[in-house]
Length: 277
Image (spheres, rainbow, N blue to C red):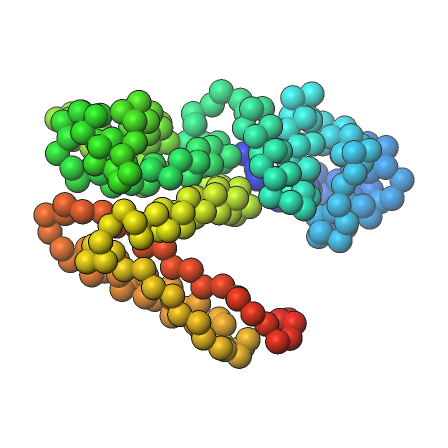
């Protein structure tokens, strides 16, 4: 079984732990675990895994004991619980930072929380595209200036190093860079925090584009429409299909010399009644 540091959801970790213990010994049970952990309720494990209840500071200590975790893994488990149970995004960011600091020094592409590094700087996805299609000949200054707005040479260099380290790009013997399919897995919760942060920056760049580019070089528009709530899934699906069509049209082109960000925003601006469940 993978160690706790590979998980981004403590309930998934608990579920895998129980499944493995039960497979190794049919006599293992929730009662067995609770007895080892010093917990009175034999049903607490199942209730926690099924999200019917959470863990407190006291029960985290008991669970760590029952799981047989080392002091370091116990601290990781504790902060993973706090991360998953946090109500605000700021709290989640706080505990995610702690989790990243507690990781073991293993190959980076194997550590789920490191995907956050890719989204932390808005230009990393752009550098990933430029690196493999632009003739930059290891000139990091040229690479940095190609980004709009331009970034620092040091930022371009650090971005390439990160992309190589994460396995998002690879370097051929002849010096060319290629995009790869990295072996990275991450929980949706970590991913969503990172992506929200990235989208905020792209939304800001979209606002700045109104002054940065003439209308002939951009397309920024807004549309206000009234809908029935049950049409929302269909409209979101249409947006997803539109994105796919844009990608297909872009991929048909050759001799790429420009890179665009397409930020589609679709959100409520008024309601006459509460959303239907």
